[in-house]
Length: 283
Length: 275
Image (cartoon, rainbow over the protein chains, first blue to last red):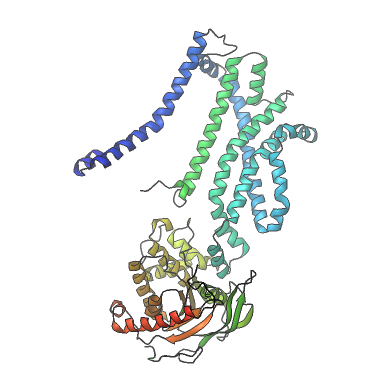
């Protein structure tokens, strides 16, 4: 297609340069980061070899990959435990964040009264709160969920609240003129208008719920009560099993990336038809 | 056909239709102390195409919001003579298209009916008919960002008209459009109006637009916002492109322009050129 277009469409030097530039950028966007990544892994490998570093201090990438394969059963079952907490807490964060935001949107007074509590929850380090939770909550899963939820719900709450309050004034008047009820205004105007804000919060919350789950497991795992990926890391650390430690770490990173990509895709699919953020640049 | 009479006194009974609404001594003072409107007396008759013409700050939009019920007057009263008239009989077109960006054209026009509990299937004939009348057939599934400025405004008009209101309030609806598009929309709006003879109150700062469209022009002055003068546009409908370049139109515009200049000069204080 492009070849034909180029023949029929005689491009001047400037436009031809622009087309070349665009093609280069398209390829570079993928090739460059990949190349740097491969280079970094190769360098990691070389450093281990050149300095004869023992594998219990810094294992070679190949060894880590081998461990990932050999310990797959153990690691992936732990990953599943962590993922369960992550997704459950994300779900609760969505329900709690949106629910509270809708409640706040009903009245400025409610928002003014309760928003500070949300901020207090957000700014207090979860590691510091956990011992308290440990005292008051018995169930292990509930503990972890509560922890991850506290970390994850705030971006959803604050973004959705902002979205619900940033509805165009004229649109609000239009609904009023047509005698819309509170519920109709929420359902047909404020919730859809808040969608881009909510999805932005969701992307942040996705990563945070994973972090929250891992941190919670860490604190709980230090007391030997957890079976998630974080406890595998702690365990491997005690045993100087660096390859497994690295393997678990990589698994967590990849999971985080995957969560982000999936949420980005969902956001794009929902917004692509109408929201500026999802539109392709037009010249 | 409209009457060939030039009326000067506000509230004079020069129209053909019965009185629909009278503003009696209406004033509006905002909480910051600005007197947006002061002692406004104005009669709107059934079937009028009435323009509120004036410089910025003369309270035209405030008057429109009062009529719509989006705001309440500080003093005076709005007298809806047609008993049984309720505000759901009003359509409003804003300065911007003010569409739901996530909803397609059909859903945007359906909205007022949807809010009244009319299902998609039940609303479809009315929505499609309205889209046809604003020349947007075939665009039901487009979202607003895929439309041009003029087309968005057409959707906005279709949405305002889909409930078949008796009164259409328009707040400088075409101010942001280019001239060619504005002329086209002017023509189409007149066509709509002549088909059904609903009442239009049209806010504008354009002498040419007000004269082209309306049968009555109310000129307002600023600081405080008030009615300065009122006149009938003595030209018959239908008005088309030929009218736009006719000597009659030019003469009427000059007459209106003189009145508007009088209104601007009547404004007390040193700043009479807006902001």
